[in-house]
Image (cartoon, rainbow, N blue to C red):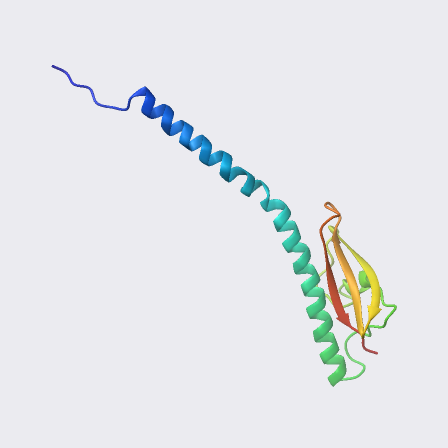
Length: 128
Protein backbone atom coordinates (compact mmCIF):
# COMPACT_ATOMS: atom_id res chain seq x y z
CA UNK A 1 0.00 0.00 0.00
CA UNK A 2 1.38 3.42 -1.00
CA UNK A 3 0.83 6.06 1.65
CA UNK A 4 1.33 9.63 0.44
CA UNK A 5 2.15 12.40 2.85
CA UNK A 6 1.73 16.13 2.42
CA UNK A 7 -0.53 19.04 3.25
CA UNK A 8 -4.24 18.94 2.69
CA UNK A 9 -6.02 21.64 0.73
CA UNK A 10 -7.66 22.96 3.92
CA UNK A 11 -4.28 23.38 5.63
CA UNK A 12 -2.88 25.32 2.66
CA UNK A 13 -5.94 27.58 2.51
CA UNK A 14 -5.67 28.31 6.25
CA UNK A 15 -1.99 29.29 5.91
CA UNK A 16 -2.84 31.63 3.02
CA UNK A 17 -5.69 33.20 5.03
CA UNK A 18 -3.41 33.76 8.05
CA UNK A 19 -0.72 35.34 5.84
CA UNK A 20 -3.36 37.58 4.27
CA UNK A 21 -4.55 38.78 7.68
CA UNK A 22 -0.98 39.51 8.79
CA UNK A 23 -0.27 41.42 5.57
CA UNK A 24 -3.47 43.47 5.92
CA UNK A 25 -2.60 44.54 9.46
CA UNK A 26 1.09 45.28 8.76
CA UNK A 27 0.70 47.14 5.45
CA UNK A 28 -0.79 50.39 6.84
CA UNK A 29 2.16 50.73 9.21
CA UNK A 30 4.64 50.59 6.32
CA UNK A 31 2.60 52.94 4.14
CA UNK A 32 2.54 55.57 6.90
CA UNK A 33 6.34 55.50 7.25
CA UNK A 34 6.82 57.96 4.38
CA UNK A 35 5.01 60.79 6.16
CA UNK A 36 6.87 60.01 9.38
CA UNK A 37 10.17 60.08 7.48
CA UNK A 38 9.31 63.46 5.91
CA UNK A 39 8.41 64.90 9.32
CA UNK A 40 11.67 63.60 10.81
CA UNK A 41 13.66 65.10 7.92
CA UNK A 42 12.04 68.52 8.42
CA UNK A 43 12.73 68.34 12.16
CA UNK A 44 16.34 67.38 11.38
CA UNK A 45 16.82 70.42 9.12
CA UNK A 46 15.26 72.69 11.74
CA UNK A 47 17.51 71.15 14.40
CA UNK A 48 20.59 71.68 12.24
CA UNK A 49 19.64 75.32 11.71
CA UNK A 50 19.07 75.82 15.46
CA UNK A 51 22.37 74.12 16.33
CA UNK A 52 24.27 76.16 13.75
CA UNK A 53 22.72 79.32 15.19
CA UNK A 54 23.79 78.37 18.71
CA UNK A 55 27.33 77.56 17.60
CA UNK A 56 27.45 80.87 15.70
CA UNK A 57 26.24 82.69 18.82
CA UNK A 58 28.99 81.13 20.93
CA UNK A 59 31.68 81.87 18.33
CA UNK A 60 30.56 85.47 17.88
CA UNK A 61 30.33 85.97 21.67
CA UNK A 62 33.91 84.78 22.14
CA UNK A 63 35.35 86.51 19.10
CA UNK A 64 33.32 89.58 18.09
CA UNK A 65 33.39 90.13 14.35
CA UNK A 66 33.62 86.43 13.52
CA UNK A 67 30.72 84.27 12.49
CA UNK A 68 27.46 85.60 11.05
CA UNK A 69 25.52 88.58 12.33
CA UNK A 70 21.93 87.56 13.16
CA UNK A 71 19.52 90.45 13.64
CA UNK A 72 15.78 90.57 14.27
CA UNK A 73 15.14 91.28 10.58
CA UNK A 74 17.47 88.58 9.23
CA UNK A 75 16.13 86.30 6.52
CA UNK A 76 15.81 82.63 7.42
CA UNK A 77 16.31 81.69 3.76
CA UNK A 78 19.71 83.43 3.90
CA UNK A 79 20.58 81.81 7.23
CA UNK A 80 19.99 78.36 5.68
CA UNK A 81 22.74 78.84 3.06
CA UNK A 82 26.52 78.37 3.16
CA UNK A 83 26.82 82.17 3.27
CA UNK A 84 24.66 82.05 6.39
CA UNK A 85 24.83 79.40 9.07
CA UNK A 86 24.68 76.02 7.30
CA UNK A 87 27.71 74.40 5.66
CA UNK A 88 25.90 72.73 2.77
CA UNK A 89 23.68 74.20 0.09
CA UNK A 90 20.02 74.19 1.14
CA UNK A 91 17.73 71.54 -0.27
CA UNK A 92 15.09 72.77 -2.68
CA UNK A 93 12.62 70.49 -0.90
CA UNK A 94 12.21 72.94 1.98
CA UNK A 95 11.10 76.54 2.35
CA UNK A 96 12.40 78.78 5.12
CA UNK A 97 9.99 81.43 6.39
CA UNK A 98 11.10 84.15 8.75
CA UNK A 99 8.91 84.34 11.81
CA UNK A 100 8.76 87.01 14.47
CA UNK A 101 11.82 87.57 16.62
CA UNK A 102 10.91 87.15 20.27
CA UNK A 103 13.02 87.34 23.42
CA UNK A 104 16.36 87.42 21.64
CA UNK A 105 15.55 84.59 19.23
CA UNK A 106 14.81 84.57 15.49
CA UNK A 107 12.19 81.92 14.73
CA UNK A 108 12.41 80.26 11.33
CA UNK A 109 9.69 77.94 10.04
CA UNK A 110 11.07 75.08 7.94
CA UNK A 111 8.38 73.55 5.74
CA UNK A 112 8.35 70.62 3.33
CA UNK A 113 7.23 71.86 -0.10
CA UNK A 114 5.76 68.52 -1.16
CA UNK A 115 3.60 68.10 1.97
CA UNK A 116 2.79 71.58 3.21
CA UNK A 117 1.33 70.33 6.48
CA UNK A 118 4.78 69.21 7.67
CA UNK A 119 6.80 71.98 9.31
CA UNK A 120 9.13 72.62 12.23
CA UNK A 121 10.46 75.75 13.93
CA UNK A 122 14.16 76.57 14.24
CA UNK A 123 15.18 79.08 16.91
CA UNK A 124 18.33 81.09 16.18
CA UNK A 125 19.81 83.34 18.88
CA UNK A 126 20.12 87.00 17.85
CA UNK A 127 23.58 88.57 18.01
CA UNK A 128 25.16 91.70 16.55
